[in-house]
Length: 209
Ligand code: SF4
Image 1 (cartoon, protein in one colour):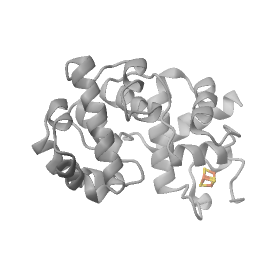
Image 2 (image 1 turned 45 degrees about the horizontal axis):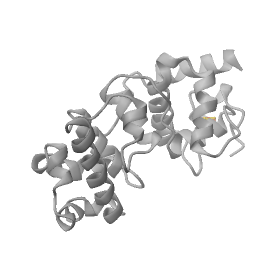
Image 3 (image 1 turned 90 degrees about the horizontal axis):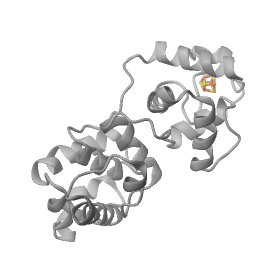
Image 4 (image 1 turned 30 degrees about the horizontal axis):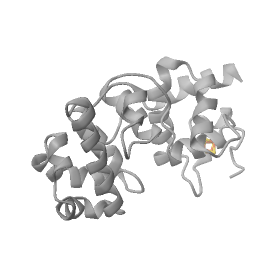
């Protein structure tokens, strides 16, 4: 298993040398906001929305004190906009109260913010702070980890635990980018392109999905 995992890492790093977070951001607060908005929404749509949003709301206090309907309207096209606006206000209220408006750089502090789950915390830590504290498990990472035989779990936190055991810590952030990129370009949810897949020889599901 270890040799196969290493071979998968090498092949994906060769295939996607430019893999990175596809959400646009220039600071940790912007990434936190974009990640909250990205639930059930494409990164492309989130980037369209945040282009204007980040012009208007620049600090945690701006979000915390925004009139609810105004913030809802601003994020409406990302879907589930009432919940997302509520999560933004809750997380940013905590940032103002507990962290002087700054985004903290530890899992414990990030995860304890209202509206911030482990996945969001991992995205922020890995991409805004360059800290490998966990592996981001989204729908692509879940699907590909299962197809590649890296986990039998379906719960994201359990999948993350399995991945953290077998992937070297320095690769945790990149590994999820590689799987996300591969999921978007080759290993589609329906009809994966196994015939042209760069890791076909390392995948127990090749041609079987
Ligand atoms: S061989 Fe098929 S199922 Fe396996 S990773 Fe490649 S595209 Fe996905």
